[in-house]
Length: 247
Image 1: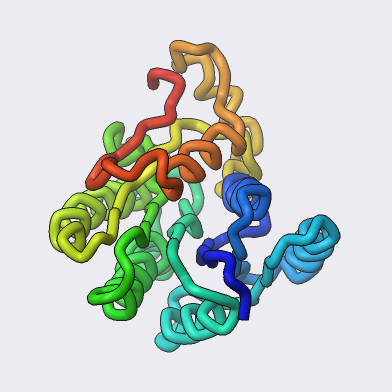
Image 2: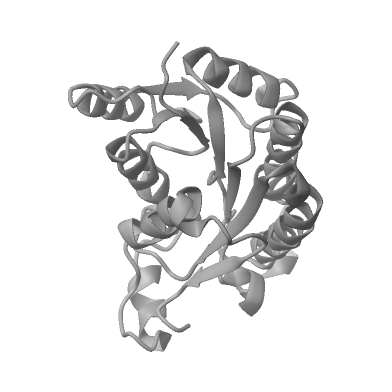
């Protein structure tokens, strides 16, 4: 058992999630992160960070599994005192008009982006209520919650809007127990999520509409998450922090 605080991060092997894991380890947290099938990437990340003395464990886990919340928190608690949860894992489904979305894709988007984070938040609330104050949940949402992403991924946008409402409600419900709940809303970030949705160059295309004239970087989102988890944000609760370049 380690004395360092442990943070659970879902979707930790690529893009924003990977950078969150790296920054938290640099800050001295132990990190347990999930991935859905990137065994080689997870092992490489573990080896790289463990070489610097970090406590980091990757677990292959479908966050939508019935037993996922309990399994994940049990594993994290075996590593130390769990003080943070970052709901980062998400899927967009394929880009395209809403009418072309299949039932299977719709269910997957809702299950991964809304139901799974809600169940993980519930697990955290159950385990942390009545415990030591200072626990933190950060939900990674999207500017799509505000724009709606018409003709691209409306269902994804809807789940992210719901996740922001979940954030605000839980912040008010769990705040009295000393549990802070916030969200980071990224704009268009240059990661592989666009290629997985079917348009590798989407970040560059959308960047023409961003006031800062470029897509964001994974590190810029991870830094916001890092701050919200820290004591520097000790009076921030129920906030949706937009990191969008002004979009």
